Image 1 (cartoon, rainbow, N blue to C red):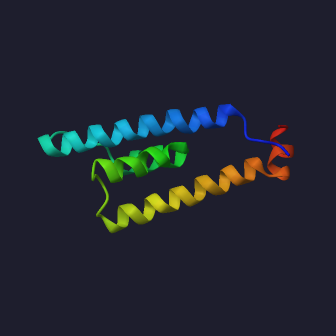
Image 2: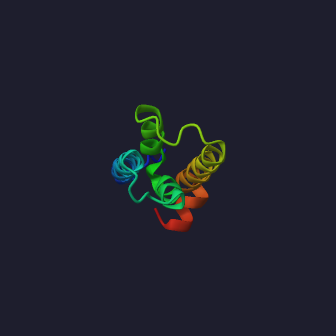
Length: 99
């Protein structure tokens, strides 16, 4: 059975760290009344394998955890990312990508 390479784990780890930092910077900016990171940027980071970091930031930093519309879009990015991951790990995805 094919196992996802360590590269994929590294991508998720790096993207999650970057996304967590983006949330932390946005939280700091919100507190100080400074320029904020657009929500679309936070969603794109989550979609680009950073959703675990976004989820941790929402919990630990208590940031973007109450706004229902933001959370709905966030969970949609999680579903899309996981679906893409499962496709990459499927025989059809591996054949298409020549893995």
